[in-house]
Length: 166
Image 1: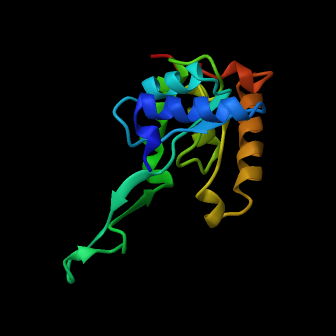
Image 2 (image 1 turned 30 degrees about the horizontal axis):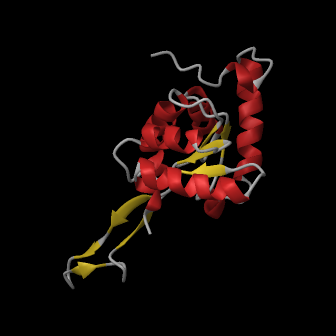
């Protein structure tokens, strides 16, 4: 069920969950929408404590010899470095539309990637697919982020959150 692709659908789910759940509610948003910022606002309005984005992009691969989709269910989730530009744009749009924290994810595999997300307005980041390639990637990203902050005279990561100049 694709309940997160419309403002009303997402709002209904968040409202229903919030009615029975009083702990921190982080809503993961789908990128397969027209305006993710509007959906984030609808979730915030219904009680989301934070939003996390993006989930996988809907993709497809074709077997040209068999003239069939390579996946048995035709489509699947596209993740990793390929989705990073889309994720950055969406994090930027959402961070400028809501007051709740924004958790950015999608293609983060280095400190530079993490810094980009933070500068776009993410207050935290998640690393997913890169863990399959290098299980120590999170430790490396943290070390690289700290080194970058030190090299740029930053006392806190908060100094770069939303610091993208456009």
